[in-house]
Image 1 (spheres, helix red, strand yellow):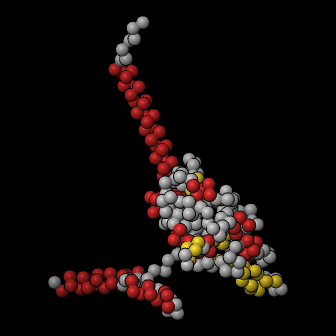
Image 2 (cartoon, rainbow, N blue to C red; image 1 turned 180 degrees about the horizontal axis):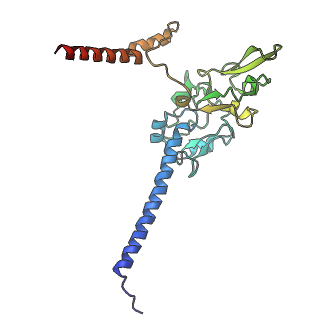
Length: 264
């Protein structure tokens, strides 16, 4: 039987349907891409990872670091994880980094996305200088701040007494008990997440965030005068005007402008 030619109207409708389908698919793909890109700033990377932008450019998504991890800590991002696809990450509440002394996930990286130099001291790998993130405490949810004795995060920390310490203070509400409040020291914390996993609250009151997200930045305008290393930042400091100084300058310029208009 001879096939009837497709009418112009029908062809138009079919073409439109195909176009809408492709556009819809493209929209889903683009939406997924945006989700992954937006979420990447909160993604926790393995030890020795480059800064996120450089890491994403350098990582070839081979998965060798994931295979090398003896604790199944590392995962490869898949569709729906809201992370850059194929890249390694970990979720501390599920499985933290157990701070392997030989850091097996790093040497196997073929591109340097996980850089041995970042976790090396005096020519030897040193997991204690890793920077996977930093622990942050929600003192509204942490039961130690309520007055309930708990040091789970302190005891779980592999750098005991350095990355997390316990601060004792009187409980004025009862008058006879003491608070044992955990304090995170960002300069020592590696972001391994053992504290987050150990937290006894329903949703962890201590959690790991990338350092760039968790911490503020004083900038070059403020210097610790008692810290010789911090004073070195003065060499690169730039003159900065405060908001108050800028507002005063604008007001002065306006007044001078009005004055000149009155004269002329």
